Amino acid sequence: MNVKWKRTLSAGLAACLLSSCGMSAAREIPVSSETGKEAAVQWTEEEEIGFLTGLTAFTCKTASEFLAGEDENRLYSPSSLYLALAMTAQCAAGDTQSQLLELLGAEDLETFANSSAAWFEGLNQESDEGTAALANSIWLREGFSYFPEPIEKLNNLYRAQAFEADFADSALPKDIGGWIQEATHGLLGKDASDFQLGADTQMILFSALYFKGAWSDPFSKENNSQGPFYKADGSASNGDTEYMNQKAGGLYWEGDGFAAGSRSMQNGARMLFILPDEDLSPEDLAAHPEVLRQILFPENAEYAQITWRIPKFSVADSPKDIPQTLEGLGLTLPFSPYEADFSALSETPLYLSNIRQEATLTIDEEGCEGAAYTEVSADAAAAMEPKEVELNLNRPFLFAVVYQNTVLFTGIINNPSA
Image 1 (cartoon, rainbow, N blue to C red):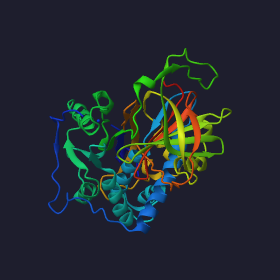
Image 2: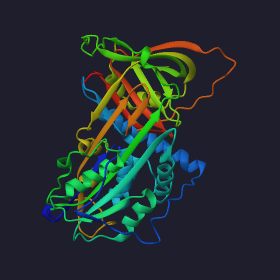
Image 3: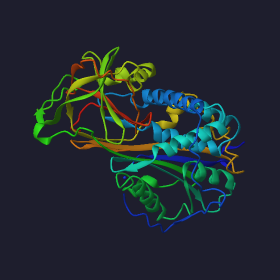
Image 4: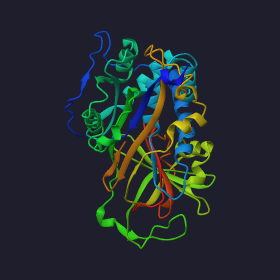
């Protein structure tokens, strides 16, 4: 097949918070009355274990790639990318769909669809204790011929809104940005130029995530202190890094080359802080998926009294070269103009032209706000005297936000003042 006959399909990813979304260029596509209902959230224990096993493997493999680099702060949302690829699989067929399912750790589309829908519904929670909100959408070029079944399936499984628009309309990027702002409570989507569409683009997918959680034991600003942060090259900041200090109970574990602890949040989430040994960098640890598994999903965590010293930080990032990275992990067919098969969506030949992600995360005395999560569970023996440990995060470290056994965010801080 000649490449010029193919149309392109872009998958955009975002992690996010609130703004108005009055659209002028796009119209929402109504779904069939038989769909649009709340997705079934029931899954068997076997299905849940199988799904989480695949999600864990995906998280560790992709995080190992996207956290690579040197001396920069990084942030990546495995759950946002996972959900976007899950939606893409609903539009794919044949070997293209098989490659997507293999990367996602799924054996067949039907079982995966039910399990991922249950996972999606379980993650969406809003209460006085905190918020975890996922939103999805699919945008189709006006005049593009498509089958309604995948659109209805995306709405049914993942509550994905569907829009149709003239992709050449100069107002459309603002509409898309408005949707992103609404989904992310205003944290992302403010720059409409991020959403300029190519002349051959027929469809774009968005999977947006917003998270906000308050510490179970908030820090007191009165206990904050100033001090240096020791960078990877051995140099130190001028002592103006602001640290939050507290002694509090939490889960603590050690592994080959690191010590880690987790702080709980009122909504059940946990934030993990991982301090490499002094002769190692965060990148050294992240380079190995099996080490990331020990870090993010520990089996040896125990309750301890932890003396915390955590720098306040805000990090924003856009993981580089997502298509090339996924191709290196075996996902080649969806990006091939000659071999991609998205015939479940349309008779028009399509291929993935790009995937990108943006993410932002901030922590302070009150808690954490941004757009990822993994939950660590352990049985604490109340009769035992807890060990006392110190986690002084005054040099480069890794972190993760975990919720409902899902890593919402993971990243590296090489300079909290950047």
